Image (cartoon, rainbow, N blue to C red; front, side, top):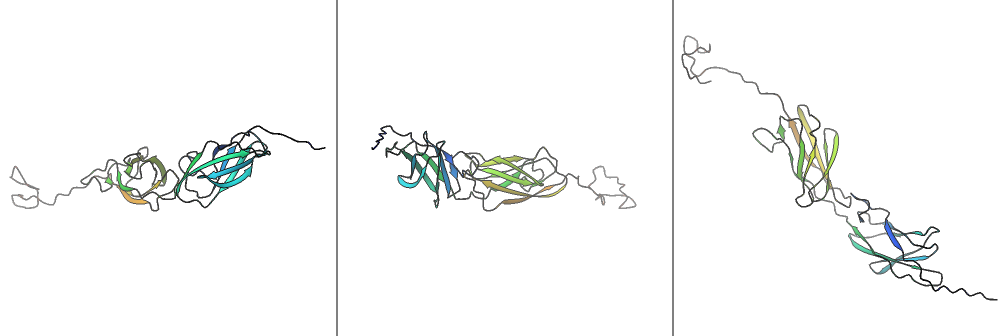
Length: 239
């Protein structure tokens, strides 16, 4: 006796839920610096054959688990944007058709080194010499637009985003007061894929809150018996 099972129903279409190594600022933006990762997804039925395609070419085959989840590893990818699709096939060989595509961008290029490092309230004769009498400052400059900027100053690491258009940034240290002295500043940038700038921008901030001393040595018009007694008949003396 032979029993014939007929399955005329369509299996559910696979749905991608993400990737295993989504590096960078946002762990769900599908922008990564990883050239190898696993595609993660789910389907309505267990034990379905899942066929995954990369830019229309078969990339991997797996089975859905008892709870309908599946993973497919991909590797050796280069910097580019990829479209992944998947179909499920039941035991009768019926295909669900390809589901909604997943777009993944791989970015392997490091952002440039931040530039034009400045401090707020750069007081004195030169507004860009990083010498100030204000111990509460902010550190600014220009980095890759939209990148995450990390500043290390006085043993404290702080971060802020660069402007999406101009790339300008400002990281505040105004909640602390730096004492007089020289401080090394290091500035790094991270792009959306998590790539870090190859080099850190460096600068030296000098804080000097001491007032200068003034020593009078003589009067140009010190009249009288002694030329150094600071007694003069000149009503408009020159120091």
